[in-house]
Image (cartoon, rainbow, N blue to C red; front, side):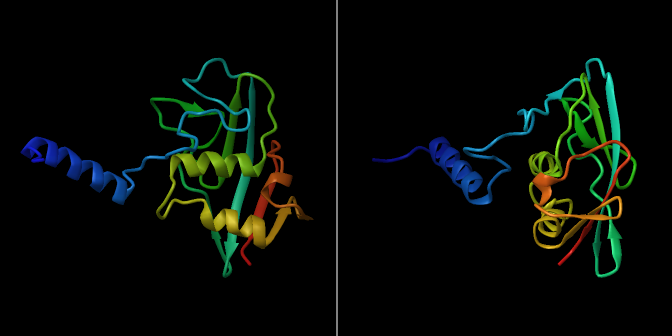
Length: 158
């Protein structure tokens, strides 16, 4: 059986996408899907606002989360996201919510799955290092840390 030039080009493109990943998530959530009850919407009525400060401390350096996590500016924005303030997680929702740090990491992984803006160093510190919330140690990993207005979360790399 002989394959035509167009069909061959389509197959080669499909194969290249499979090998390179093409940013596709097969079988998992996609950007815009609700994560742990936190929706991604076009910014309807916001009646609940909170800010949480987050930093990773690694080798004595303070590293802040990537700007724009969960916020595309056009398609949809998650109720939990980073904007232009370094180290600040914003919670802007139509009703009171109490997401966890694990929820924020899940949204981050949908927004920026790989590269320098990845949540991996933060997630690793939360799961294997020390978590300090307002000066007190917290056990249980990122799922045990609720994002509460005014709190400061420090993740100390192992």
